[in-house]
Length: 312
Image (cartoon, rainbow, N blue to C red; front, side, top):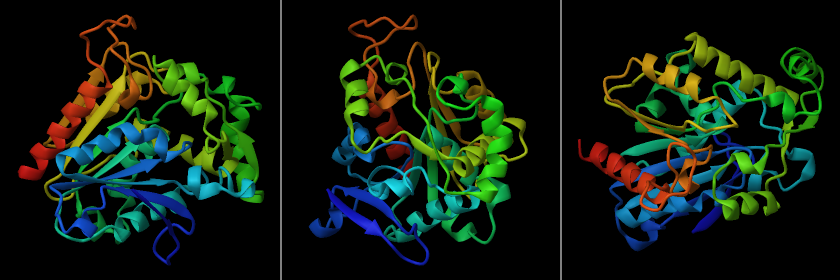
């Protein structure tokens, strides 16, 4: 595992990213690449997904501008920028990856999942068709289309974030605010939830500019104003849990149903919460039951899906 700071004209000015395994140094060519897009977290909390590398799938991951390793300076925490900046950062990261004709899959979770969906939309193709054409498929986990009870997590009221936040963002784009999610809403695994709380890189900070952009992107995806579109032969996989208390499950399913893709698939996990790749053996009622699917089974299914698409 290696960590590199990206600082180029085309890539995010300050983003930390990891690659696992380092196949280039071994002289081996992976069967596929998965680019992980992480927001509001420390990317290392997603270490379970690195097991994809055991199946010759190279995993590249990065902390978005403003979070995790990309925001060690407290003054930079939560400063993701507006939608144009966020989309440009995703494009810049993909441009930095090896162009070795290995199928590439873009993976996003939560706010990052919503950003991946938005990035893939026809409306955002402003000269980046060649970059989007590099992507063989998209994996979207618990995307933020509509948040659940966001008024609980913000000091200000919901209407102020939605309305006043835009005005504040224009006047003072670096104004920060706290965004705190109840860790018990993440998974049924208390150990993972406590690891999230204890991480020094999970600072729970955002900005009015970033939050307004997040809400607007979700609204555009839900209303159909922005629709994810295929470029050539691409596949998409959406995953969500029905017991998610961070984002609303129903809007995710509605967005999936409206996707005009020839090759689309969904993993709807009954009784699961927000971080699917770290869930335990949970039944539809949210009870821990040995023998039921867990994150390990989900990751096995995900691995099979990626390898199937790389072969086609």
